[in-house]
Image 1: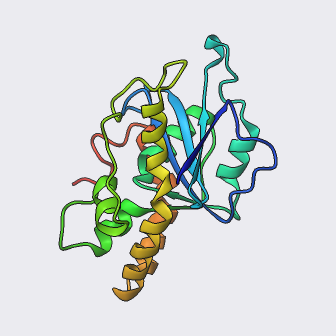
Image 2: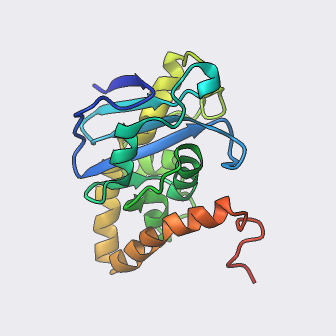
Length: 209
């Protein structure tokens, strides 16, 4: 049975989540320049999701003043496990002013080794690799609300609760197909890719012809 713990403003001091932490974000929209960071979800892969609600100062919150969360996201001894890390790293940098590293991205891993399919979304990976069906119904809900609904909390938690199991399967495939090194090189580049997005080099893409 999964557990969800909601924290206002920051993670509790002294919380240990281990060397590999699943991370996701919820924002007001899909434009990291415009849409503020509202929620950061984390899990140690133990069935518990820790949700940190980021409340702006003009709404009575602490804004980017969340030292425990920042320390974890920038800790070089803790690898942060994302699905589509490019967006989340940009959202975190824009919202909290930090660069998240080191990182792993299950979407990149899936694209590198699951070349027999074009279905690389988290819902697909949960179903195919973890045997879990998750709902995306709350994806477009108002994450900036002062009080989040139980449905929103459950949705946000589902984005991190299964990433460890998914990564274990994908890592085995990367090793089998001899693509773990190229995957790691891509992960190392992700903070730079996110910074380029924030600088406006997402459209047109700097790497386009």
